[in-house]
Amino acid sequence: MQHAVPLRTLPVGLEFPEQLRERVHYDPARRTLAFDGFMTKCRFDELTQLSTDPEYRRALEELFVLSSEEVLPPSPARGLWIGLAAAAAAALALSLTLWAVWKWPGAGQGAGARPTVNQSAGR
Image (cartoon, rainbow, N blue to C red):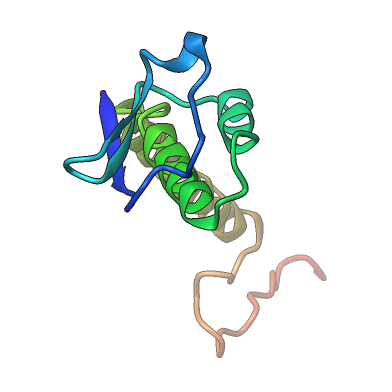
């Protein structure tokens, strides 16, 4: 995929290295700087070293960001994992609530419940 950003003019004397000419292009008619595919950090650094012109460097930064966005497309399984984690958390909360109710008599009877006393124990 090709990405392009506005750039009024290419800095005077700037020539792209031979190995990059198929990937980076300046179109003077459209006044755009374009890059084909994913731009690595090393490639970005290499292109940045070609000029100190602030407009050129800003355009390169925009191209770098645009080409980086296509690297990690959203995973369709991500929603599934979030749903499974939420279901597991709900099941754990329900299990702990049920355990607490069964473990402590009177836990489910409300705040004003009176404890039960076994009257036959003392006879």
